[in-house]
Length: 118
Image 1: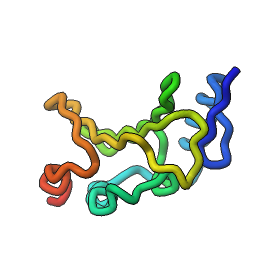
Image 2: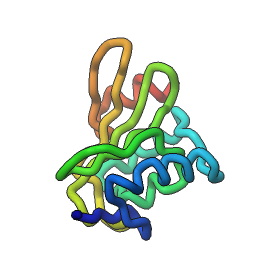
Image 3: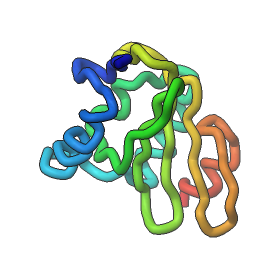
Image 4: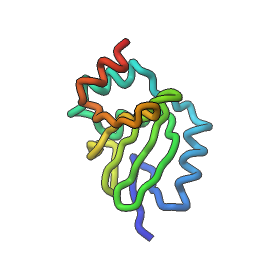
């Protein structure tokens, strides 16, 4: 069975539910619009460490490991990268998902500031 790393936590399929449960019970916080604007401004420098404090909604993927974070009822954020992740790695993708308009934005997209910088 292959194993992936996110920070110091080793993951395999059996570990996913344990990580989600730990995130729900930890002192993790939800992403805010202000967090998204701050991440937008540092888009090229973001690493997995920048997401460590936030509550994980889901972990999924095969090959590419994805982490999903809820922002609000409309928006979510998904980050992803190849297996063997650690906190200093940069995700290969960081997307904001709009469930109402069925759109997806890269964290560096100029539209992010218009949407979340209100």
